[in-house]
Amino acid sequence: MAWNILQALWLFLPAYVANMAPVFVAKILPRWNAPIDGGRVAADGNRILGPGKTWRGLVGGVVLGSMTAVVVALLAPHWDIMNGWDYGHAGYAGGLPGTPCTDCPQSSWAAVAITGGILGGMALVGDAVKSYFKRRRGIDRGGSWFPFDQLDFVVFGILGLLAASPILAPGWVFGALLADWSVLATLLVLTPALHLLVNRIGYWLGLKEVPW
Ligand code: CTP
Ligand code: MG
Image (cartoon, rainbow, N blue to C red; front, side, top):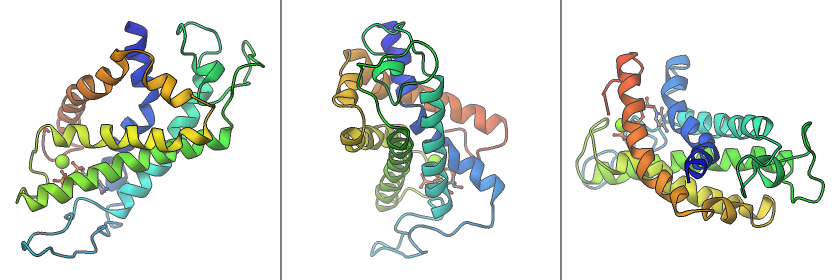
């Protein structure tokens, strides 16, 4: 079970990185702040998504999610230390130096990169969908809405993984997500806790304006 918790975090790393990406990209490219909603206002008088949801953030999430997935696949162990669910063998990709597993189903590197992009992109689509509902509830940009602020990218990230399933090694996504109940539990319960911790650190470091 301990392995499954680590596996779940490892599996979802592209979504975690993508979810943090917009804050960093905003620091690097502060002027590229074109909002996804184009500045439009809904019938209730509030912005459709708000100024915190930019194309820059979405694209940054796709690119960094994709890069993270490739790094995850490169660093994946090629020996069976993660009993039953081995990234190196049947994981995102395989065939790198280490212990080769010629019979195991492998994902192509292109599929890995695309999966990371989908996972990262979906994480931020979830973030934007969440903002839509925040605005409809009259919560301003940056206002807190627990637990949706924490879970948006997890739920949409899982949907992204399922969407990428056909291009990865057969059965791998379902095998990974359903390897043990603790995988989904980690994603749905541990992630919000980690999210709150990471945001607090980001606030202390001056990267985030609010501690949530
Ligand atoms: N960000 C961005 N583009 C996105 C998502 C986030 O540029 N698609 C940047 C914005 O600068 C945003 C910051 O990352 O302010 C923090 O993201 P988040 O907490 O998701 O946005 P909030 O500003 O809190 O807005 P909301 O209330 O709509 O969640
Ligand atoms: Mg926020």
